[in-house]
Length: 273
Figure 1 (cartoon, rainbow, N blue to C red):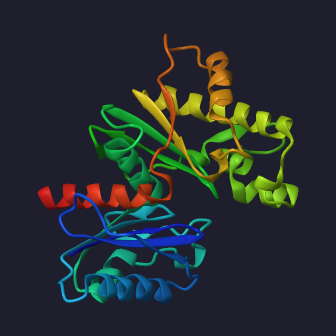
Figure 2: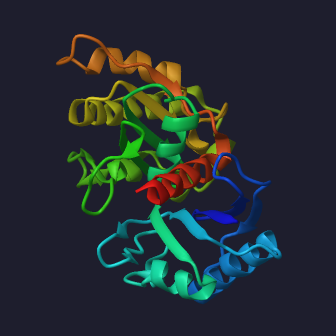
Figure 3: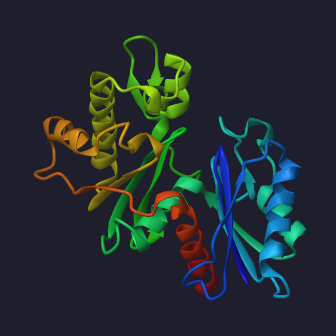
């Protein structure tokens, strides 16, 4: 049995896969705040899923940058108390199996590139607008080479009133802090039109830097009450000047389990070396 996991700011998903072609119904939990509690949650759930079967390998994503050479994580805004923790090695010891760790957005991007909206495209740019803003560049069905991962949410969008990053302007966390309400409680079209325009600037920056064949956009801020992707694309047509055409802009298809599809593909690639 192979174990797949996806650790987000609010929810954690764990599933089992027998042959790395599909996976069992995911088990979904509220993400615990404690580091040891998280290690225990994944390892105990994995043992329940595998039953009498041995756990062969494990792969998953976590909502923060991953230092691959040191097998540690940079806690960031989601898990600041976990900064520098050797999560991959600690989980491997707890599960007595090889563990492969990646950033959660990178694995969702890989899932969308291999099983979702970006399937059959050679270069896929994935952007998620959710609790934070994240994403990754996927090339020929593999996460592109990097030193610390991809953090498009940390691109600077404004100098007008102090330095502001994309996440400061578009993320659900930032909007809730700014307006004092959940983003889905805001029904003012002008508010969401402004966010669509600003997302268009983010996509412009992504396209001119990553030069993708397709851009896939997902996340909780892209729902019916949220940022309109068609309107974002309309704004983008007025912003992007250097390339003769704009690549297709598509909505993510794999919903909340994109990270598990990506983890499965990631693990398959690791096993095939």
